[in-house]
Length: 148
Length: 87
Image 1 (cartoon, each protein chain N blue to C red):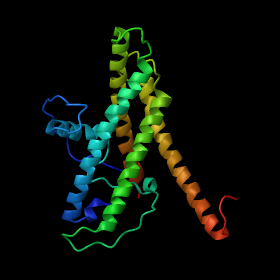
Image 2 (cartoon, rainbow over the protein chains, first blue to last red):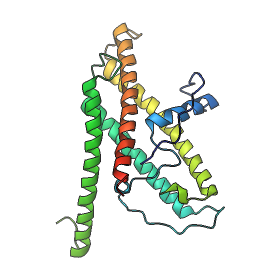
Image 3 (cartoon, chains in turn cyan, green):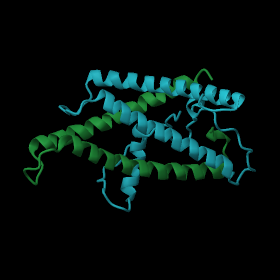
Image 4 (cartoon, rainbow over the protein chains, first blue to last red):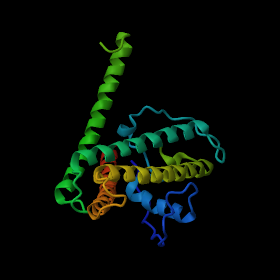
């Protein structure tokens, strides 16, 4: 998965000019500092094979200096898939683990533990569903029909 | 996609894409959080301004969600690292 790169740089204080259509350099800086805890992807991320479901083969590598559009496309698709999964996990685990009462601003211990387990189970479900889909896909190919 | 296989031009391209994505995600996070905290905290329309209770609720709501998101991110990275290790 996306392993964060290097220590997080300290962000100079700035006010976030939200909402606004054009983002200032300050906002960009804030985004980059926030990106580490909230979105676990940086350039050195390696997508997890199980998570990525090994749908993507390897495109031939272009001569150095030029851009291989196939590889870029695959990387983009993988990036958006992982980002989508992260959003879903945040949403589901929030609705399952955190009550809407908002009595305090911090996560209490129970909520923290719930979140940890929620993420672990989500990954297990992800792997299981992937396996099922692969077996079903294989059976459909062999049998020539789908959804029996 | 193992980014170490990409050449410099491709890496630069991907960096730009990732930056753009981070920006979009940040905006989405902001507006999503506003809606989430509004719908769960603000239900009394007898006045035009937020009551004290609603203000504290919104503050707690946003703090809690951001901490939650941070924790999920940490566990997410851990899980993936753990699953990738034996590969």
